[in-house]
Image 1 (spheres, rainbow, N blue to C red):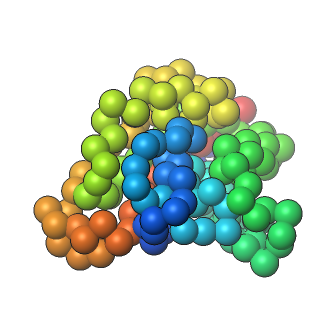
Image 2 (image 1 turned 45 degrees about the vertical axis):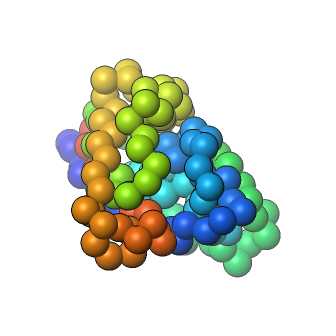
Image 3 (image 1 turned 60 degrees about the horizontal axis):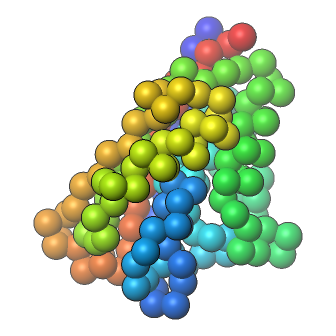
Length: 158
């Protein structure tokens, strides 16, 4: 049996925050504003995993009202989301994701992101697809006010 999940996350970009993306610290003058480290890619993957099994979303499991999640490394959230999937007897076939941002250019960081995500999810690097696109300077993304990530996962019953 297979299950498909889709996730999406948005974060405002602000000066004075570190820019975490896909579990990797990317040098940039802005970073995501959020209760955790604001890693939109990992948050989108968490939502995709949870959604595939009808388990709600990242906010249900890791609410921003809980101070134990304040500034938490999103790799921990991804690991915990994956544990919920494994507890229900599922494994992951693959992850496909897209990041929408104007700057910085991130393609040179993608292999490290794939490695980080694959390591947490017990996948091969080739099973983690990360694509990026700009919005051609349109919208809040084009003005570098925010970032969006989408993710899709395919799960299989072990």
